[in-house]
Image (cartoon, rainbow, N blue to C red; front, top):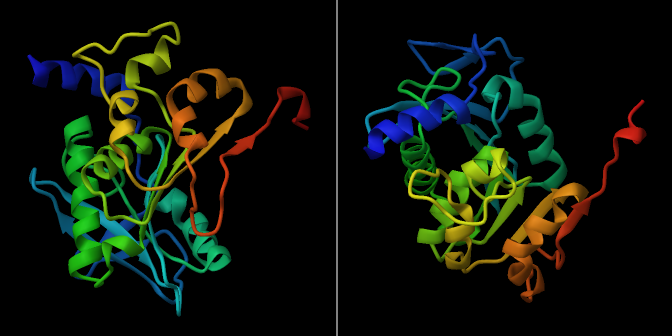
Length: 244
């Protein structure tokens, strides 16, 4: 039953770009359709569920931290390429981004369980291939990417910090804001897992989600946090009338 539910949920939760915004050269893992940049490399990473995902690594000289970035929906590495490079350059960090199963040029199908395996594989790649220590890794989850980010953070207590960018409470709560109870068929139950995250957490959200977000992350906001020198929860206020 769980597998059927997950398949149905996937149809509503995942929207990979079609076609993918980039390509890869089979003989060597090189991204095509994006400009070449020094210090940027791509590789295939095998997950425990059998998918072969594409991961992109941006190296920043003398960086002390590495950000493992789980992107939002309707995106892939090609769409995130320039952002990752700018992100690395401005914050002076290494960045690893990856495409979920079924996204970009990653094999497999998009599902909640697969994204959990995907981020685990990306994390393992950072540790085993790039020699990154867990305490030097910051997990960054945007939108649907908050699901695998929170899940991994709830299991790993030695990571440096977590950044949640427009995170979701759960899949069902995205569609129905009045939902107050967690159901067995829901996906990305961040609301249930966030109390198990022990490292500093930085939440970035827009003004109209302040009430539900504070109800879940309020205890984290009030916790004494030190995220790479930052001691705050960022609130980005945006109103439609400000658009031009």
